[in-house]
Image 1 (spheres, rainbow, N blue to C red):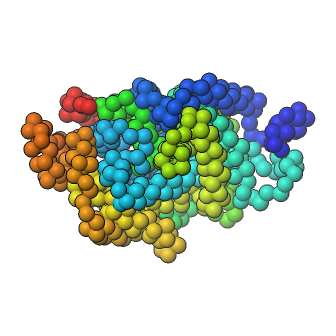
Image 2 (cartoon, one colour):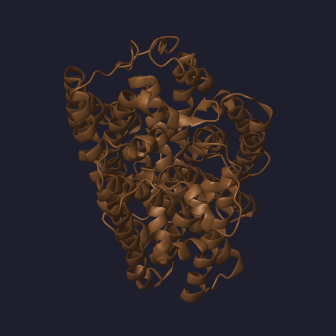
Image 3 (tube, helix red, strand yellow):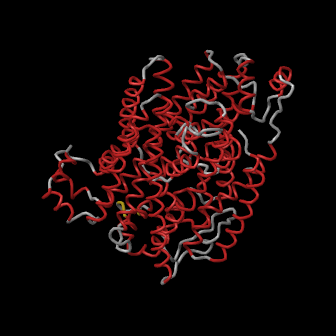
Length: 628
């Protein structure tokens, strides 16, 4: 209320405008964008409240390309972009490999076959899918609760992750010392970003809670347009600036190739960057890369985590559309996002001596400040700053709203409608959605208060939480004997060390990922053989509808006895070939815009040729063979 009062008082606003780093043009652009979000929420409120499918899945009636744009918009987050700018600045083209920590190539696995497998279930959430796979017995119910808990922890971690990035970002442009005289409470400096985060979070909460998946998708499409304009403008400014300057970087910075070590040495240029490399722990890069690839393949085989990505897949019209949507995500996201990343990085390197002091936190340099520091620099013209800020705020809103919608889906569909009020009316479901959204936002803010920085949360999410997810979720697709007990105990055996190990080991979470994996596999095997196999009818229904490849021989034999015309999935080799080609294809989608901004013509042409060849190959071996 105090902040709203400030902006309602003309004299106060004038005083603040004298000190903040934005013009009236910039603020007007941002205000129009925020009002647009409110309008979307109000317009789609009625349609979203028709029934639970309309709210959570948009009625399964949205085009795949809109869902793909929405998903891409959700992945274009401030925190992730901040991190990607940092690593491109520090590691150059070798940073192309580091997004495999997530891993970004899980979208390729989804595109090639996993999205279709998942969409064939016809369920609303990942927790409901557990019933489809394991039935309704006690073991399945145990698994159901485990996946709900995992989904909520993951979603809350993502919300906190975005929350930190937004707060650090806004604080640069609206210094707290300008506003604090008009705030009736004392706020410690470390909590200032959270005040800003709360204000902007309210807008995301408003439209996503009112309009559900429909609001999320339509707002995401609007936000994608804003982000695209922002990225193109930044890229142009960077290229114009670079045309009259030399980019002074270490040997090997332009090359994506590496040896046993990174071989990046900033000595004699900006020596303090070497301290950042040492603190990141990536120096023995071959070992790090091997672990990253190993973990990435397993995470991708496990399928999507129960967050907004899974909800977008389940919202598509058909399995074929689900596959196309997942493929379109990379096409929509990578070129536009990496134009912005490359543009900010180039400007960051060129202007580093000038902006270095603005990046100081105490006696150290915070390289995560490169993005906001460059955007506030005079090299970005007035008005253009507003477009860029609106684009990055849109990135936060998109990620936050999509993740919030996914978390609400688990609370309302898998807890409220299943256990508390199975016969809930549309009004009761709508109220439950509103209440769950508010509670989730409050809890996520609490998570954000205790987080250290963007990189620490990112590392914990991708290597800690996801490490606990891998074993059970790979086996659920590929092994018929794996049951609800094995899934539940495998998840518990992985989740407990994932939560505790950060308190025990002072190393990157990726390095203890194998230990989490081994513990989780042991839990899966013990849990599986401690209980009987899943009911045969449940397994046959799952197998016939999903049509997975893997160890399903006993179930296949029973299905063929009942239906001799049934054909098992023999596409393992083709799928793995398409995954391999798809990973190279996706890598080129990231490399091309970077080389374009760097004006490295030879590398750009080589990457473009590889993209053409891989695109043609995927057209013949994947797209032309899609089926429901």
